[in-house]
Image 1: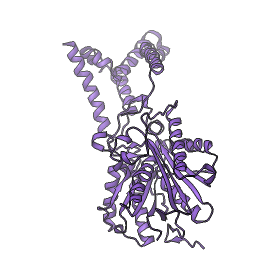
Image 2: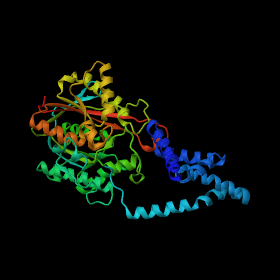
Image 3: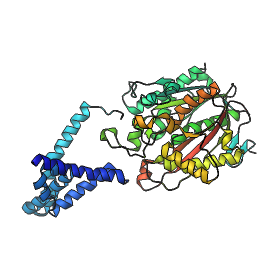
Image 4: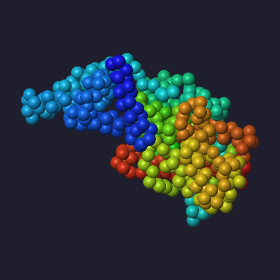
Length: 118
Length: 339
């Protein structure tokens, strides 16, 4: 049941992205940044938390979840370390994801070469 | 006195230069398209053994020019000028090609209009008596253009339905003061026309008004009507641009529905090859002209053709700063007879 909820919520987030891509002039980069920012705002005002509880990875894996983690990290940091914590908390909370992205991205770039699309 | 000027933007050549040799090289995708039998050489691998897409494009252009010179039974010393250009920053494909050839070189930037820009200027140089033989050439490469103008390939972005597919390939034409045709008899130089379109994934719509402007000017300057041509063909307007041109011309009282098409529409099978709005890029007009049109004219199946390559003269930087896309179109008349 948890898998199905994750699949539906994660899928719906992607459907929203695809609809924006197909019906507006926005580029994938615009949508990425918009979703990330939306995740920060929704996470900051506490609206994303219930979705994470309901859908698990379906809500945390899409880029919205990254924004949510940034917001949660900044709030936690502010609680424990004050103003400095508000600045450092977001990146601290997401450091695992960022480091993994850089390391795996680097490895993939060594293994694979870009090719012309078919 | 501009003795050879006709009307506002056209020149009539008094000693029309003859096309004596052409050559085309295309990538694998173009080699699967409807015009595959007209291309001289089809690459199996669009990297062609090079380390980058840009180096591959330069090699494609270099080999195309060498083969065109060879086809005409000429050597590099017989050529007075190369007029060439491409889409890459600082037109590197053309410059690095010219580096290998030791032929006096004029680099042109007309984006996808480069083929007719170079043919117009080449014809003027020859008719003016400044040269006997000139090479006109251009190239483009899907992957080098994609990462310069759109997104890096590694990014894996989805292509918009109005977007076009940059043709991988190169075409070269050798013009000569003597020869038995086909001849370049008229050239109409386009003005920049910009109707304010900002969408870089809809180039056809951005260039269509320039194409219409050049076509109408050509008919007014020369006194020709559309029916004087067997074929009127634009460079890379694609499906969307082509239908806009037909609509706009109809409003102006010109009916081109029987003999007008676009190189970008013809080069790919849009249904089977998933190219969306059609082909684009400098090589689009270059390979369709130097492959299909030239060979059909040599066979006598086409006697009089108006070739009009179209260009979108923006850069990604100024486009991102909110500027719109300036369009241009240069037309040349190619005739199997001198008059």
